[in-house]
Image (cartoon, rainbow over all chains, first blue to last red; front, side, top):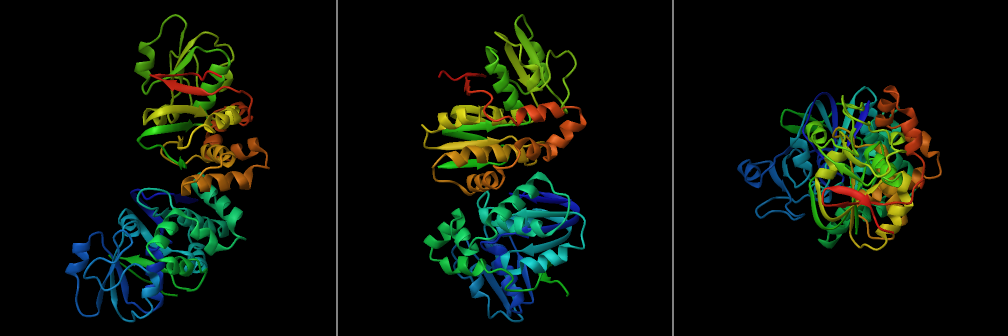
Length: 224
Length: 224
């Protein structure tokens, strides 16, 4: 059975969860790990992130889209090409909040950048819950679309939420993904803040073949 | 701007809300009013309903799909063809809960049975929030589909939630509505309880041309 939660809610399960925050937390996590970061540690608060500052540790994230004062990097995935061997501490508005609500046996991070790598990973599992991060408590189109792209490839029994996301993907999958994403409410906000290139970057499908898996308090690259 | 909430949440707004519970509360409300019921009063609790029992008042609703002991009618819309001049007190699991969470200037009830009557009503309004009742806290396919059918006909700016529901309708609208509804999780449960004919009934589009509007504590027929 595959379920899709359109908004984060407390999840406590024995089975597998996948967190999706296309714009931009999971895209950033995937990009960082694909570019050699040792790990990405999601934290809820800015102060919590700052406390961890040390050599080879980057303090990263955003509030209202913008890099907080004193941080090394923001939440633009395109800032994460030169993070080899670094530990990334990441605090964001929606994605890290969603992650903090999930307590499951296994947790993966997905976005369009690693779409088929995640799909292949999920083929081994019977019960999957995909959690869309949303934006400030509202449904985010791009997250549900990405969830639908995952569901579409898996031949499992679907909840109504999973079915809706799959139908959304079926309706959209032959269209220009970047154009679809640019029409989302969150993308329009990001574009206003000057982050248009992030949206273009995040709408690339299968740029990376890694799957972030959550171990203890951090995402690391799932062993191939 | 049109918004669609896929699950009920507290809504307090100056503008117009529409509550949708295709299976079955809003279908029942529409059917009752179309067949001459004076009003439908949604209440949360069984005891609250029972207290109101009197001449020309019908105590109606369901728990786990079934008519509670001592009630006059269940929550099958097809029980509501002979309710002329009656006051209907209705308590259901999902629909009346959703209604109780909405505090808006205007509240209409929608389902497929009165789809285009509701759409015509909404053409006069700039800001509309459609609240899907869901089922036991989970997204209900049939409610989101009905919301999408409404959104599809209105040329307004859409939130991401509204956009997703519209895409769902676009993907599905040429298909057999009854077949689509029968595949929903809630329909499958209702069918197991022996309510298959309700699902067939509720999948009729535009059987009625009335719009229930909420006044004080009850739904009445919106004046034409």
